Image 1 (cartoon, protein in one colour):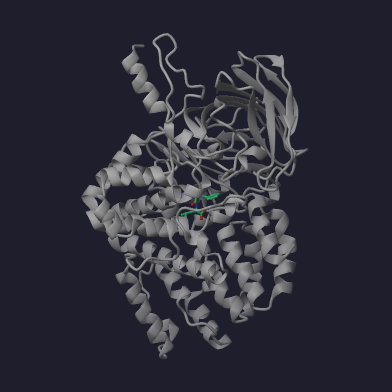
Image 2 (image 1 turned 90 degrees about the vertical axis):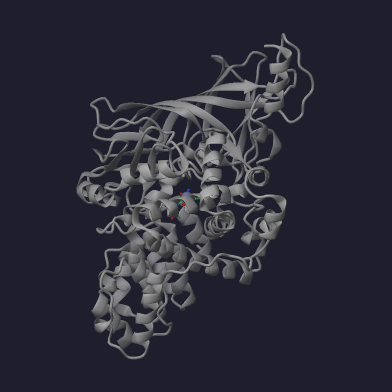
Length: 627
Ligand code: BES
Ligand code: ZN
């Protein structure tokens, strides 16, 4: 390498530049990682990537459903600064470290004190030549990321099931790892599971069960730890399109294949908007209902709740959302959880653009207006609770569980900020900007500050940036006055029907033909509070809300049934809370019970339901209900 190219290399890789000569291109004693990695500090990992960082993982694991443990070896290739004497990994929930080897030879290691959110650091002493660190370990049955399900908790009810959910900082509970979103690695895996089950990861996956129960995987694109995922169950595969397919238990497959038939179209629409899909394949697995989220964007294989199977394809915006993360989040990744809005705000924006290109503006605007309502409630909640800082786009989650920051602020305030930028420069320019942003920063991390620099350099001059109050949007509280409020024509029509009903028109004569579940949702959410039993009964007779197969409609309806003591819905609500572990539904439902003086009922149901929930839902509900 000549001196000029060496200088260029150093300038690109490092912020602090020392010297460079042609024999040894880089004198700076820091690991060669992208410059953003040098510029931020992630408070939620013990890792010190500037000293020593992982680049690749070979993971070999055996999964035992009897003892609810995973026994594994994690072998990491590492890069280290010449002066580094140690490499630090994150662990959590008593991950049992059995042995550590460096380049095949036993190594010294130490597990430090446990922090309630971060877990415990695993420090491994490095030799001068160290290239590979191998860790033999065993997980604890209580590992927070992993949920072990009994056959009873699945659709087929014949085999157990397992899934991991690692975002934000739970990956460390099932493998020792440098668990920060700013640290990427490629991985290969070999996983042994009981006969009759298939293992799947966020990687190149098998599509059929085999006799041996041994499955191999490879993820060739570097990913952060929170995107490493594993699921094991008795599931089948069905191809949906050239790049898309679905995994589901056999009893769900037909319904699932119908519901998500438009996945390939979504992928085509997404590529048309913001450039090539970089992960080759996009599959989705329908998990059992205890999955704590709607969806999780594990690369190549989105994990999804079965509660989006409504029978009418009405809840597929979630698929567009998780697919969009293949660009915003998985390609360009928030550097720390304080920058979470860069993942979710961009993804919501992208999701709505995909839905708009498939189903039109009216459809997308309904989604935006539902999001706006959520946002108003979230902002009010934080203001009332004296937590105005949690309404900033850029968060400060130091000393907190990063999960606390994962609210509608990142999603919806983030979305409306981007919508404001779009309105300011026009859609054409904004789309060019976004496409370049994703391609130019692919497989890199992004801090809020780096994004602002990028935005000012490529889209908004300082005057425009200041005139829209961008800093106030990002670093300020609440909702700025120039928020581009959505306006849905479809919802105007719904409002008119609500008014008509309030003024005495019988429910069964309202004009509701061709309403989608979004219109129903808007209708239910905007019903007056304090309805009498007869009024509730009238609505239920006319629209069969209590019998709805749509989880969103049902959850919105429970708000009224609980607050208005509409007893006929109690059993359905109880069954729902016991089988569904999706936190987005649990939190408002248990909160409504709590706030309407039904704490005893809430606790009684929770006692029965809790064993069915994943740790992240348990954590939130325990706090809510004082368990
Ligand atoms: N990545 C999130 C889920 C998540 C966020 C898990 C933070 C853990 C911590 C996922 O992409 C998501 O946003 N899911 C939403 C669906 C969406 C349509 C808004 C959900 O689960 O409700
Ligand atoms: Zn998301």
